[in-house]
Structure formats: C-alpha cells, structure tokens
Length: 127
Image (cartoon, rainbow, N blue to C red; front, side):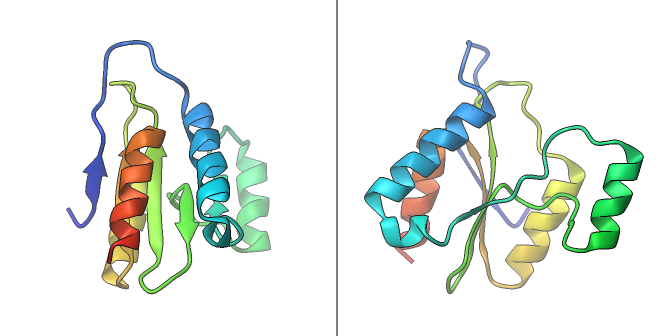
C-alpha cells in the first residue's frame, strides 16, 4: 500500500462524506486561501447510466477511481475522503488511482472525515 490512512472508522452516527467534504473545503479556503484557489474536488461519485458514463469517457477526462481532492504542487496532494462510518470502503479503482499518483511522486492518502483530512493536509504542508 502506497498511501496512508488518516482517521478512525466508527459504528456511531457520523456526518456524511458530503458534509465532511464541505467542512474541509470551508476550512481550507479560510485558513489557506492560496490553496483554496487551486484545490479541486473531483466529482466522480454518484450513480450514472451506462450512456452517461460512455459520453463522459468519449468527452475525455473521466478517470475511474480519481480521488476526491487534488491540490497541485511539488509534490501534489491527492486524497480520497470517506465518512467515518464503518461501512465506508475504498474501491479497487480508488486504490489503483492512489497508487498511480504515488508512483508519480504525489502525497497520497485516504482520510476518514474532515478532521483526519486536515491532519493529512498539515502533514503534506510540512514536507
């Protein structure tokens, strides 16, 4: 495994991934506005029909498993965010994407929730 996992899963009720993502980006934009201007949230999640996926692939730029957050840099920051729920899983496509990014020198991680994502961001900034 070429990426680090931040945070701990829980069986308790916790915020959704969308809420955690929003919290992370709000804090990022207020604390580090220079990073907030270049940070990308890759929106690969959600159900799509076969035809929608085919059109996205033909249009270009659709990469299965692409991580949720990418911040360009040297190294780049590539993070897959999940909720802290025990049921949240990283797919094989997401693992393959993280490994491919790590092979190119990116800082790669999985974060369980916004607090864990923030710790990952601070570790990346400390490099």
